[in-house]
Length: 72
Image (cartoon, rainbow, N blue to C red):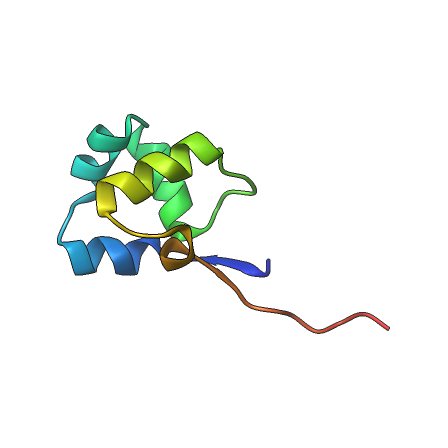
């Protein structure tokens, strides 16, 4: 996958636990953990907005695009 989750890094910088962030965002620990480890294929804008609001960050702080090899 070309989109990499950097949520763990932002959470560490903000010194917030998975449980605390899940509570602030209003999603389950399991779903937030999947997002943190990159084991998801989609995220709702409302969820991304809530995460950014809780962490006082931009979407680009959480998600990073890493281009892969191009098919010929």
